[in-house]
Amino acid sequence: MRTCLLGLLMLFSGLSFAAIKTQEIPYESADGTKLIGYFAYDDAIEGPRPGVMVVHEWWGLNDYAKRRARDLAGLGYAALAIDMYGGGKNTEHPKDALAFMQAATADAAASKARFLAGLDLIKAQPQTDAKQIAAIGYCFGGKVVLDMARQSVPLLGVVSFHGALVPAVPATKGSIKARILVEHGEADSMVTPEQVAAFKEEMDNADADYDFVSLPGAKHGFTNPDADRLSHGEHGGPDIGYQKEADENSWADMKSFLKGVFD
Image 1 (tube, rainbow, N blue to C red):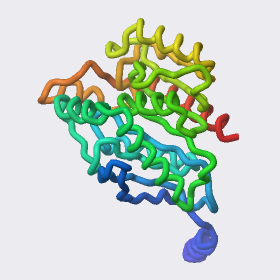
Image 2: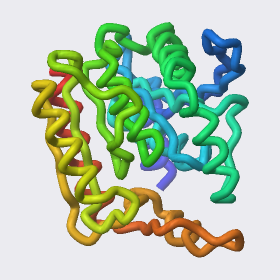
Image 3: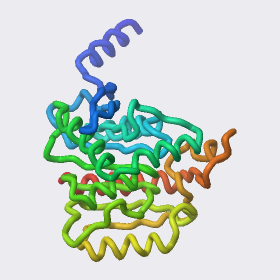
Image 4: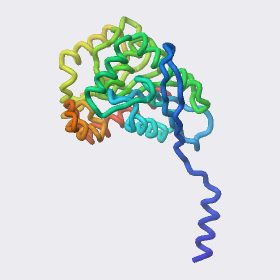
C-alpha cells in the first residue's frame, strides 16, 4: 500500500492543475465614476487568450455576474465582469435595481464611457489578447452590449441573454461591426412582440450579422438560478423565472458563437 501511495504521489507531483484565478480591479470611467471590475482567468493557460466582458443584470455587479466570469475563464477565456453602476454596488430590492438602472442609462454617452473603461481594462490585462474581445450581457447587461454593438464599439461579437431590445441609439446601415446573438425567452413579459419585430427590422435595415433565438416557455431572467427566489422576494419582484433547459441551451449557443467569433 505504501509503495502504491508513493507511486501516486510521484505521478501527480509532475502534473500541473488548472486553477481559475480571480481578482477585483478598481478602475475609473471618463466621467470620474469609480468602478470595480472582477477579472477571472485560467492560470494553466500560457500567454494571451480571447477576452470576454460580462455585463450584469439590473441587480448590479453581484455574485451571479462574477460566477459567469469564472465560467468563461473555465472555457479558456480572459473574462471581466464590469461595473456599470459604480462602486460595485448591487441589490436584491427591485426598486433599488430600477433606480440604479435608470441612473446608469439616463445619459447614453456616460453609459458608453463606463463600458469603454471596462473594455480598456480587459485589454490591459496580460492574459488578454487585446485584438479578440467579445461581450455578453444579462437583462440590463443584454441591452448594454446590444447598444455598444449599435454604436460601433470595436467588439468581435456580443451575446444578449434576456436583454431589453429597445435601443438607446438606433443602429444605422453599416454601423454594426460585431456579430450578434440574442437569446430571448418566448414567455418574457418585459419584452413585447412588437419590440421583437422592431429589433429584427432594425438589424435587417442595418445589415447586421445576427441570430435571434427564441426559447420556448422561458421567462425574463431564465439563466439565473436565483430568479425564482427574487421574483417572490420580501420586497416583491418582477415577472422573472429560471428555466434550466433554456439556461443550458443558451449557454451552449454562446459557446458555439464565441468559438466562431474568435476562430
